[in-house]
Length: 96
Image 1 (tube, rainbow, N blue to C red):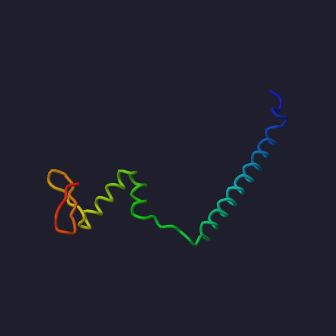
Image 2 (image 1 turned 120 degrees about the vertical axis):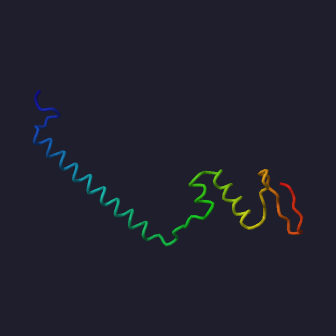
């Protein structure tokens, strides 16, 4: 086979090496710019309890988290038969 693409082996390797160096330089520059932009953000958002629950397990995990919060706050109780009962402020319990 003669010279594919009109390049000899050493010419191709030189061209390939130059392209590799240019690509690496572009990647380094872009990563530096992105890192600088992320450091300059002053309004960094801290995820809330329900956002973390959603990321961890979806809407089912959010429902579990909300229910656990209600139980911990004393707003509902769970009976042995696994039924939820609302604890009213009047002292009466209502089935949910």
